[in-house]
Amino acid sequence: MVDKLVKIGMGQLLVEGGEPERNLERAGEMIKEAAGKDCGIILLPECLDLGWTHPSAKIEAVSIPGTYSDLLCKYAREFNIYICAGLTENDNGKVYNAAVLINSSGQIILKYRKINVLECAFDFYAIGNLLSVADTPFGIIGVNICSDNYIDALDIGHSLARMGAQIVLSPSSWTIEHGTVEIDDPYGEKWFKSYKTLADLYNLVVISATSVGYIVGGPFEGKKMAGYSLAVCNKGVIANGRFNEFAGELITVDIEVPCRMEKGTSIGKMLKEKGYYK
Image (cartoon, rainbow, N blue to C red; front, top):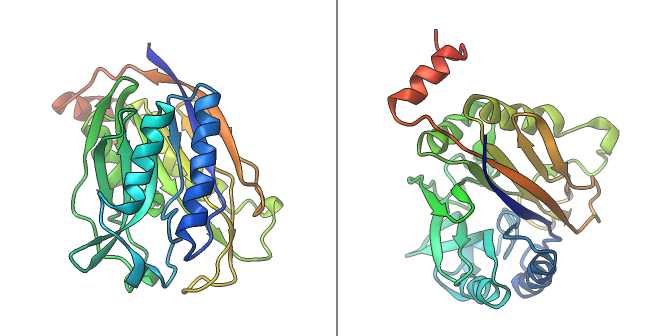
């Protein structure tokens, strides 16, 4: 049973470490493009302002609300579109890998701080401690970030599903070795398996948008972000971006938002019937 239809833009954005003005300018152009293609929502990558694990995070991160989130709110109002984007947040001296969901009136309706922070990033980001979802005209939306969807951290996705999420949006920055090529399939099992597990169990849609470009500075210097943004439902992959470190592009996908009937303890019953619990 399908409740709603929504077109979502997956913004596979070139992100340059330590260059927030250029990154936000490109984000604005991509948001405008998405609105022109009648997208109701655009999803943008993780830490799109300063870049993931770039040293500038320690000294240049700003608050949310703040300079960069305010600009995204302005774009949301101007182009009448919902925006989900990853930003670097400074909250009283603590820096977080954060994400915001902004409605078409330019209001931040959800802010999330990444929980499953990679060990190599402990020197950059504190651990988040809150999960939530937002009720929107497109359905109930949950937000997590990149490695929150590792198979050994899938309880984060389970929790969003328990909260009623019909769509999970995941700003990401998938990073691979410089010499990796598409035939090596570095993402397939790593991301698809997790996304498909949640989609199958709960009848929801999981969508990522990841950065492109080369990483300069920080523990991943010299590696690359090569796109391949991904949208998965219980039928499988419904859209993905090109695999290329130069493939900055907007991918649009029409989503059939599933009508999820189970809630509370009825979810446990459903999972047991599907064989997830013995």
